[in-house]
Image (cartoon, rainbow, N blue to C red; front, top):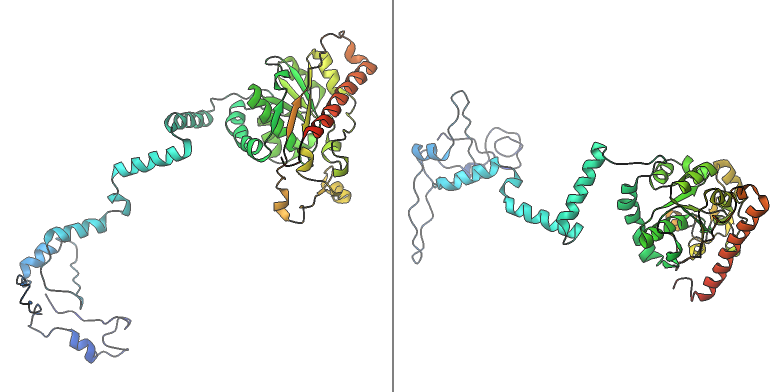
Length: 401
């Protein structure tokens, strides 16, 4: 092999030190003299070693890969090169390691074992059928093979994702205790009427997941028009089963056998000061009673205790609320003082009690047009919920227990 220029480290490609053309004495001392071969160190007496083979042209041909006919040959040398022979198998292994990707050396069995372990951690011991169901769900969503009703309700998404996301909050954070779930009809149309509180309408979401877990039925909430004007919120509300709080939609759902939920207090209920907690506001004009009378479905009163304490409302900014088109801008002990952290609800203990159904099928066909009858039934529902709230407050040991 021809002698090559020796370039010490740190000289920016110039021989020697600095920018001169003559190598330094230290560099010259490293280079072997022309026509000489570097000798192996003498063997120790107690550990004899085999003689080191001298490099020759045959060894070079074995160790170096054969270049193509039209490929230029480039030879390099280094001061650290040893003339000792290197086993051919070792050279091939090094060449293969450099040519393959870093993942090529992982066996297929290890990949499968890692995949099974990750699936078991995510889906549990029964990960195979659950993974199959999840893949089938993705296939249906991608191919459009799913059903959405005329109101935009997507039952599959609601059951698999919305309810799954709300359930830990209901069970672990608010520790909801449900009473009287047997008063909810197993089939057919019914109207669930509840008190409204909490500054942010979390009580509606918790009622939906509680009814689904107790009865297997989906509650179809009637929401204010503001809900459907909000970006993304309106679309999610539609997919979750909500529709606009109007008489026409309510009656169509009730006639179709749906379980419909209504909160007659509206924004006056969730936006009332903390000092007025558990004091029911006006129930509107009794439109929900008229819808129940026309369709002949039972009215199930619902009393919710615990939602008043999640965001204690101590103030309001009416000027800013009017500017933003909102019913109110809440001020709580933690919001906006703590910023986004102030939006985390306090972990109060919740009690949900469903009262005995109030039948409406016993009234005449024109009962919905009688204002006095509508007012009396509305007042009956309101008083039932109010008295149940007082009873639950007396039974509750603590706000957070």
